[in-house]
Length: 75
Image (cartoon, rainbow, N blue to C red):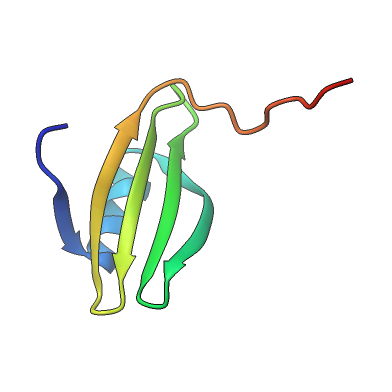
């Protein structure tokens, strides 16, 4: 990924859900004005990190493959 891709937050969520078949797996505050979300496609494990701003804009800031939702702890 060479460029950050940004759009209206509602359109971004719609595109991730409907066009890519991704589901939001988690989210957390980065700071008072920024929320990070992790989206994952169930069919192939591709993952996308989206940064959401309070002004209503969202940007894809990272993408990858082979998402693992749980990592086993020591036994």
